[in-house]
Image 1 (tube, rainbow, N blue to C red):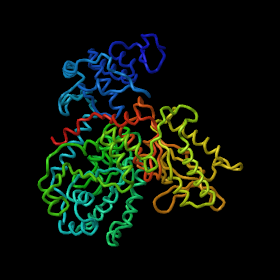
Image 2 (image 1 turned 90 degrees about the vertical axis):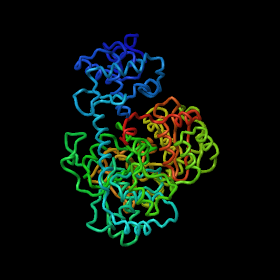
Image 3 (image 1 turned 90 degrees about the horizontal axis):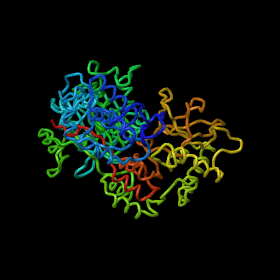
Length: 624
């Protein structure tokens, strides 16, 4: 990618016409998008800044937010930044400014302020990190809210009743992380229940809520929330299932607990993208707020949530910090889970008196408890997930190669760009068999078995388009099914029994959300769309579905929060910037029984070696 000045089409929308100097060089190299350059140039004109190194820093701060970071570390940006588009760009040859001189120029600029919260400068630069002012204020707000809640008097609790409840609801002998998490959340204003898929996070939440409803006094008002409608629906289903397993008295005290999106909980304001009905001046009425899939919550949404929750309420943040983070800027759960901090002596003493923290256990910091025992899948998938999470590429490749015929399989395919790539016979057979079973149950109206078959196998991709994307592999699967005679019959139309459909918009009236998957089933002479809901299936007339898509493959991002019996992961080439450690970890941990990875060893190693680098100052500042 070169600039218009170097002979490229001047009408190419990737390039800024009339731009020169450092901004043009970085735009031409694919590091900066046109929008980054325009914003930086405008800020320079408004603030009277002409130093091109400062304007470059401003453009990189804008770019950072688009890529999920909330700030830029000028010392490291030259070695961590990636190019725009579908391929990595070698940025080592670019004229990066000398970091000490660069920082000094920024600190001297009228565009940059070093004051905590005063001033009107569009950029902030505390501790050597460059922020857009808005994101600095949000990060500071989250830090102060968490600090103040940790410093306030802890919730009133009947310790003897809590001890009895822990013994009743958590029967395991010896150290138990779920019991520890429930105890910490009972004793603290803010708690983080972290853990990978299948580690019992929802079980812990349900039993925690039973403990709190068992305490003397009025029953606490509880809110369950998640960042997306799909995640909220799954949270409600999972908690409902766990509540059914509780003792009768606890089950009656909890009743049915609905869940909503964070936007609905806070009260969406028409015309506002990040302001809500509930805020610092109009707090939420709830005593306990549980947020699931917190890894998907952006910095902006976390700031809005914490300012809306009453200071005396409990906040329980649940999620996996190793999964894919929010599509917006911030990685709050990861920052919280890994932040250094001091021991809370009173909390530590109470936990040890409750026998939930052994003498040699690590003390709790920032209320973070990590659940580490996996219940969803077996040892082979667990070993692969652990190797990916720990960044051990050799162990990950060894786990893939040693799993032949078991729960883990590696199909080495150096290139998948051919129309019918070799080596995929097993994938094709599995996909055809799963769809044949789905169609057979859907045609005879067996809803339960059709929904079970729907989640039997899922094909996951990193990209949406291109030879490694969902669109291409969806077409590939349709061709496999047509060749095998599986799918619509000669008299079937668009709405044929056995068609798997993906919901692409939220419909609160129907209780359907973007990302939900269902299947068309023939019942009583009519074809309906059926969606699993944990209890009774949800049936929807096909005429009421808004723009559904056939689902043969999904992106890993869209599959986050779901689980399937068998998963096939299609890896892009090593140079794809979407190929990260978090993406591969999220993909393989969607499987319950079996996972197959299709791609090259180089792609596996590139993914494991490339963690998502989201720049943030929150982690290091949480203890201040």
